[in-house]
Length: 387
Image 1 (cartoon, rainbow, N blue to C red):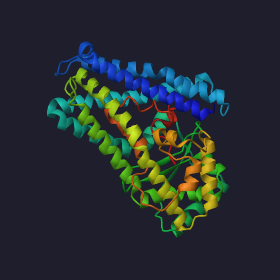
Image 2: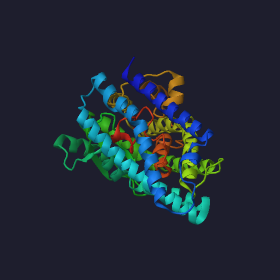
Image 3: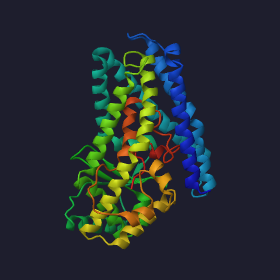
Image 4: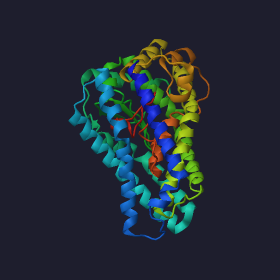
């Protein structure tokens, strides 16, 4: 069994366990029996909210240990010392838990003042904040280091890529180069619409040829240029808000007490799971379309094929999957399907599936780090892998 398949099974077990536990906790009204029902502020609100977040972190620890320490070492793709894993995990969990705590307190505050509409305004504001500050939050959570100076060969590759992208009619954007330990870190696009930045992993810059790097950068510039990145963010934004509003009207749910809010978040887990099944199709469609559009500008097909193969090897090295597994579990198409199915159709919503997971930080989403691509990997909790 390949490392990619082991990670997929771990993710399936993790997501399935969290969803099942959430359903059972709500079915037996556990939050209402064990958490404060008061709708006025007290010290208990902060204490119990912190306790719930700590229980979530401890519940996910075994999955994180397997995904972030055991599997990488057994695959022998990288050697991770236990101390290094533990320190990275503690830092990532501390940052994420703090964000969850702030989100919970703010939602309660807006909910108690203005009801569900106020809470939705709060979640929307928090989601916008996450989009705006995704880069610093990613560096803080995953200990990603900024690389200020590139070697001369790498500088020349970047210059070549930007000149070629300009010749293809793609508007340049600021580039950010990040040092990283996890080979699966892919970077991506960060920032609010109109203020986007392209994040590139240091290892990709050094390992890709000039033409391969040109194709990789051009794809992300094309995702901004054709609006598919904005549509992906908008899709994730709407999915989170709609799911939170529906979850808040479940029996026992709400936004005015800790017990009601936790019930809402547990209900939101099932909605997030539904998104994991539906939204990957949009992400894959956009990937195929962007590949085709960049090649229509004049990019060499050979550069396209080599770049996607190299980036896949740097991640889980699974160039081919069955159609069923890819349809259900993978928003990023396999190398084989990208090579055989790329086209020039209209890209709908790029990276929508995994952006939804990130934006669910705004309402304490329980599945944000349980999926196969980032379980146990703090460097990928904020900036999830993309094509």
